[in-house]
Amino acid sequence: MMETRYYEGCGREGPIRCIFLGEFHPVAGPKIACQFPEDYISKEVFDSISAFIIPKPQIQRCTMTINALGHKIVGYPIRIDSSRYERNAYLFNLCFVCDSWSKTVQYEPVVKKLGEHLTIMEEETRFVSSGATRLPTLLAHLLHDLNTHRKSTLVEGDTVMHLKVVEVRADPAPVHDHDVPVLVASVGTPRPGAPGRRPGAGRAVPARASPARRAQEQHLDSDVPVDVDINDDWDLTTRQILPHITGYNHVSKIAADTNVEKTLVKSCIQNLVYYGVVTLIPVIKFTNMYRATPNLSRLFSDKELQKSCLAFITKGSESKEKPTISDVLEMLCALQQGTTLRAVCERHAAGARAAFDVRRLVLYAQLHGLIKCLKRFPVYIRTPCRSAGFGRGEALGMGIRRLFTGRHCADEICCLARIDLPTLDQIIEDDPNVAVIWR
Image (cartoon, rainbow, N blue to C red; front, side, top):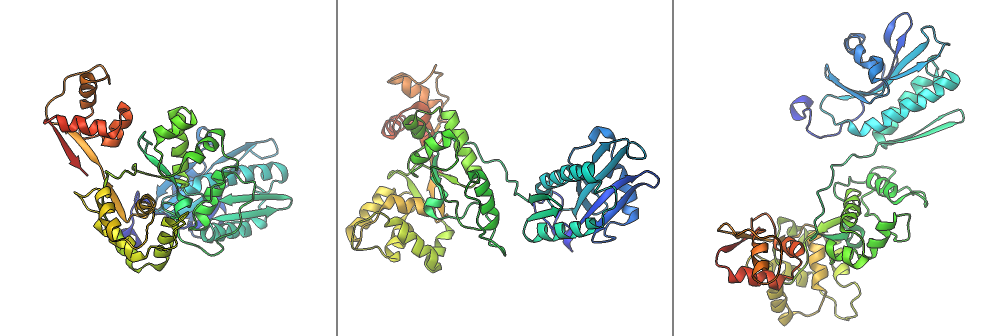
């Protein structure tokens, strides 16, 4: 049943089904010295893949994954050379066994750390080769903790080892000059892909832990946004740009205001996006067009979302009259293609009972997926004349027209050509060969 639902490469994580220790016995050859649960990997299966579990010296101390016979096995083969062994060497491999369809890349650092840790214990006390009676208990404890809590602490004598399964995420998309970074914690949105709460969630992270580690810890243990402290142990570039991440400044403006090279700002923001501290949105302008998404229906029924939205859009407001959720819904539902944000604001201002920050509402609604910004993509219908660059006057217009390919939005063109939006609008308006695509 499971095989028909999931398949290799589907990207789904599965539990660890078994942990076993394979070794090369001086007489019996490759064999399973210990496994939990017992007999999960049969002797016939192990014999079929033993050449990969105890491999040639060329791939010792390399993380390896074997997908065969209905099992996906992750291991880290170790070879210890010493005259105290019968063949002057001891070879072993502690392996995790998962379903054949399961994603296992997140277990590779854990398997490697375990292998290195057991190597040290073997060199000091021969803990592995002596067939220690504690080994089956250790494997059972490890299997339970990693499957249940995604972390484990192993204690053997004076040796303590902490293990944690950290989610391996895809690389974030490139950051562009016109992107606007927003601190996720400032709006109260869960980090992208954050799992729900699990038993034992919410344990404190050490105060001196690095920001990246705190982001990872909280990502795995709760769905609460990462709190950002500017005075924390961030690198110098991050500390310099964090005060300028307001939700309204685009990357080019942040680079100019902080006097930091733009490529460094992009790399820094991309790193913050990876850890879920920051997300990116388009520049908020009153000439923009927005449209409601199907997620807007959540705002009708989700009381917590309503409360969070009203608190965010009235933050810092000194007005005694507070807006109601009806005021918010009326404005958001009025957003549609063909109507600019300015037109909606003017229409709403005439009958509004209470004022609120429209930009904060747009920011909040975008981050929660309630509305979507429609971008303008100019397209030059005829082939534009070649221009050496972006000059002034007629040369400026010809240089910018090279970007009218339908691949660059208006915000991106303004940043690349270093012009303001009214200037770009005038160039588009004056040229009958330019069409505009909204999407």
